[in-house]
Length: 229
Ligand SMILES: Nc1ncnc2c1ncn2[C@@H]1O[C@H](COP(=O)(O)OP(=O)(O)OP(=O)(O)O)[C@@H](O)[C@H]1O
Image (tube, rainbow, N blue to C red; front, side):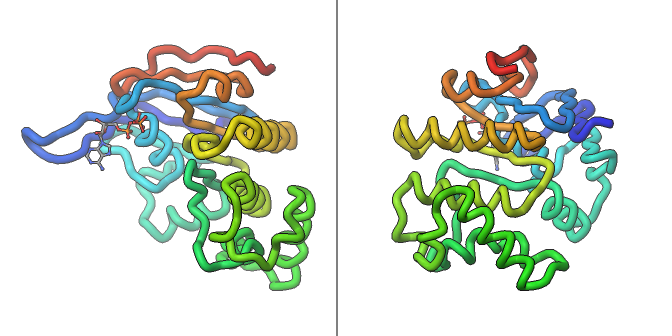
């Protein structure tokens, strides 16, 4: 069964003469363990597509099945529950909670689950160790470097142990070395079985992925194999 199944997805913003059609009848199927990059010019609809896949926005038309469930008909509460247990996000500007510690940021998605504090602590400690940032656990995230912040964001995505990780220009705010390190971490997560979808303008970032979907003007222009298989 497909993990992500988009059927004739369209998205319009605004009304009447102010309408923007961001997506036009997108059909896209992604399976467990895939590593996909979504590329395309600015304004082509990449972020809109990722937001719909991530259940933070809803399509105007079409059907979205996430892990076999038609999420287009769900209410907000059900949608956020499915999102929390299925999807993690990694953003260009990290989207961490300022004035919270590294530990608290990584633990955040776990607080919404039905698991004990002890289990949360063990899980978070395990992933902080795995990413080499255990010594930063009590530090306020606003005091960290860009590379360290992105490691915290990856630790948060790993600790959530969701099947899907969505990344929007995740290397955009990083230097080359930290960008490469981040892509290695995403590759590692993919090898451990996660389905990863990354939006990027950067061919180098796309070269780490196994499949490249190119979008132009709200439509899929091509869907090809990436360099890494
Ligand atoms: N909230 C919104 N309200 C109105 N129009 C929007 C909104 N969000 C996006 N759009 C429009 O939808 C189209 C697609 O935008 P989107 O952000 O998905 O493109 P993108 O490919 O991610 O662009 P970029 O690479 O510049 O981030 C654009 O024309 C944009 O102006």
